[in-house]
Length: 250
Image 1 (cartoon, rainbow, N blue to C red):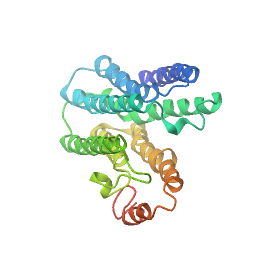
Image 2: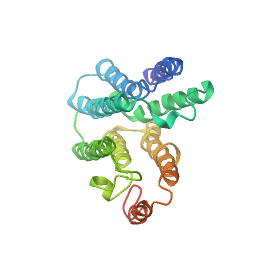
Image 3: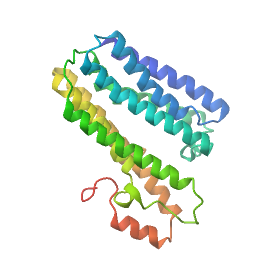
Image 4: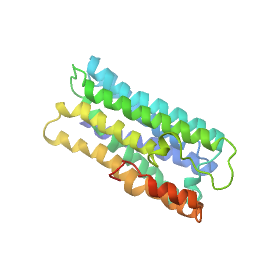
């Protein structure tokens, strides 16, 4: 439990230092790489210093580490190509506004990785194969969706063009669906070993869902698209025939 609490302090410290550099240089190059790096560092510490190297613990760790390497590498490459992240244009030059983002990121990292830390503090001798398979589905969806959108944006497109092929033919935010599946499956992997107050770690997938559906994910993109594609009848028709995240549900 002490290591779990200390991890929050260290995660916050890393993000505050990254904030200082990012604000001083007005750069977005550390934002996503620091996010992924915190997950990888925390999980690596718990794997090597909070228990034996059992197969179950190694697999759980790799579920997070592979996700972090994939996402961090992709986002770092994307920001290198794009130069900046337009999501931060409204508050990048505001000390308090930009700092709030980095603090929220620290809190989010700690909440999301909580079940992994709890699980790695235990002797996970067996592999939860069903949770692992679900994780594979989630990271595959997220990876394919990210690359499809990135590839689309890197090809010269006529004004008003939008991605409506591949996974985006069926739902408007498949990358977020993959992210939710990844963290839900990680909690599922750990859940058979939880007891008492450890069940609080269910906040991890719940927090991911809340962030993406109601706070910083889908709402921001959908709001931006309202202005970006105003009067675009093709986009209006696309919105009417697709769902945001889950066909028939949302």
